[in-house]
Image (cartoon, rainbow, N blue to C red; front, side, top):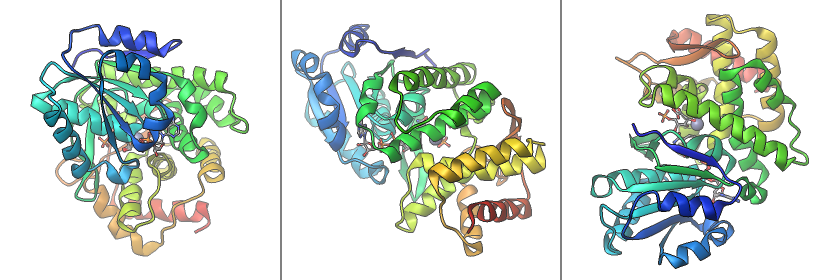
Length: 353
Ligand SMILES: NC(=O)c1ccc[n+]([C@@H]2O[C@H](COP(=O)([O-])OP(=O)(O)OC[C@H]3O[C@@H](n4cnc5c(N)ncnc54)[C@H](O)[C@@H]3O)[C@@H](O)[C@H]2O)c1
Ligand SMILES: O=C(O)C(=O)C[C@@H](O)[C@H](O)[C@H](O)COP(=O)(O)O
Ligand SMILES: [Zn+2]
């Protein structure tokens, strides 16, 4: 996989011009969702107009990270004359960068694209590392490809219009990066005050967080081994998220990941010896800032079935990424169905359900 350029911008328009001109292109397209078209596009509009950029706007929200929206983007590219030598800019959150990235990867077997993430989640996680795709058949990211953006341009000024829920959604992936990296970073994340947000400090934390992801992706771009660390909290988190969509009580990705972290740290404590004091502190932080996703014991089988679709599984065995300590990663861990159900009991007990 090509090494991806990731820039923490001081001057977005300048960095974008350089990234665009790093290779020739014939036509320029910009993909936004309904919100980023209004909130974020003006920051690069002058530059885009100079290049006669064609704008494609899709509906917002993960519920639209689907085949219909993807087909709409393919149609727009095709009807508006995109060629193999065209360039797509994805300006938005992880929904836009995942779907736009896959549209670029698949259109005429692949065109170049640039990501400009506009949510915290997309800045620290989704825009980097080349995982692109859509939800399908009720399952998260069921269809997709590894196809990195040629450049990722992070402008943290965009975070100033993000609502609190989307702030915390992204913060969950940062917490995941803290847990898989080192105790100092994990502790500084637990101590960061979001009321009010210190945007200067947040920019520093974004830089650290995205670096943790970049370093892991560079070692293992196709998730054969250590990249599975980046999936901590997702075996269960994706099951919660899929269930939330099916039952028409949708939750944001990062919230599902936070609750997945609660579950998977519990499994870590019983299977790989993760310290109970760090489990308690992390659970406390998540409970205070994320509330909980309501489940009872009738949900266990359904959640288990969702987990059988996790991409880390082989031969029907559910595969977890667990921790021995903060920063000590154990990939390819299995658990019995009884242990998994006991994990859900723990989740309900600590969430007061
Ligand atoms: N590819 C990866 O490695 C990876 C990693 C993590 C998550 N993801 C995926 O990312 C998606 C979630 O991404 P997300 O949390 O960014 O969601 P999102 O893209 O749906 O954005 C959340 C909301 O914020 C709005 N928004 C975007 N930028 C804004 C801004 N600057 N100000 C105000 N509002 C803004 C969007 O319009 C949307 O309504 C999920 O589909 C998840 O599966 C992918
Ligand atoms: O980059 C990765 O690798 C990740 O697993 C990052 C996750 O935060 C992200 O949600 C990813 O899309 C999950 O991928 P999946 O392979 O479990 O669908
Ligand atoms: Zn994630």
